[in-house]
Amino acid sequence: MTNEFKIIALLGRSEDPHVSSLMVALNDYLKNKNIEVIVTSGISSQLKARKVKERNISVEADLIIAIGGDGTMLYAAHLAQYNHTPLLGINRGRLGFLADITPNEMLESLDKVLQGDYASEKRLLLNAKIIKPNDSSQNALALNDVVIQRRDTGRMLDFKTYISGRYVNTHSGDGIIVTTPTGSTAYSLSCGGPIIDPMHDAIAIVPICPHTLNNRPIVIPADQKIEIKLLERADCNAEVIVDGHRITDLNMKDTLSIEKSKKTITLIHPPTYDFYEILHSKLHWGRDNRSQNKEGKK
Image (cartoon, rainbow, N blue to C red; front, side, top):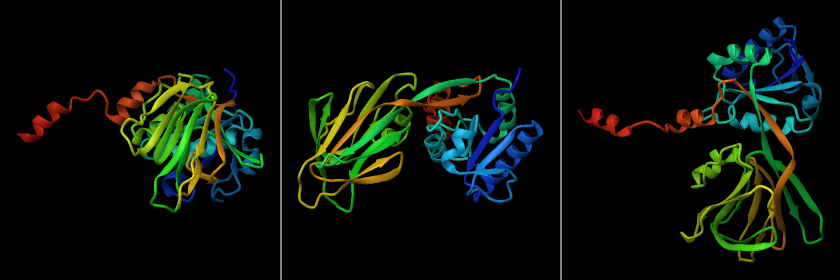
């Protein structure tokens, strides 16, 4: 079978020796397969590969391989979205819900991918738009989540949420998360949000430390538009965070509009990929802790 990936980009924190060693091994492996390797200009000079500008990575590459944790995958996803370049992750982080190939499986899995034996899936993106009173705006794309949180204050935030123009609730708390299925196993999960199967076309709205217990997460269809408006409160500062990166302040009379983007991200997985096996592995689902506790007491 003809290999469809003629040019492959390697992304990762090359200053990390664990990541760097994997990048060197991948570079040598791919060159032996007569595949051109490209990297961003910030990559260590010890990696002998053609360097290109960040924004051009997805234009030139047929496949992007991210080596690191889910943070590296998010960085790679933001580069991949410019030209819908598929993305594959080698996990050198901790949990690794996005980067699901271990270093030990790396070359064997890549062999299969290059032979066309792989699974692919499209993940939805959110478009976040901060609209100012003068109608100026700022946009950002999120693979994981869009977060409103407190900034430089010990006070709670007060804000209203609307779904497709319908008033939903007035919230008081530390903030709120609007998450994709991909992001449902990230920050949202630690705030009590639901896990959403990535095949579902849905979005979750998850409060952060709500003042009242009846302020609960809600899952809605992804085609619904969400609007969030900050209410006036003394000494109350808020900011918008997209996929872990601060975008801007959110001020009184600003509106944060969030809706499903027309763009998607394509993830490449080994042919044996199973989302529920990932949950078993990362969250220890399916284990009988009762028998383990009994053994520990003996």
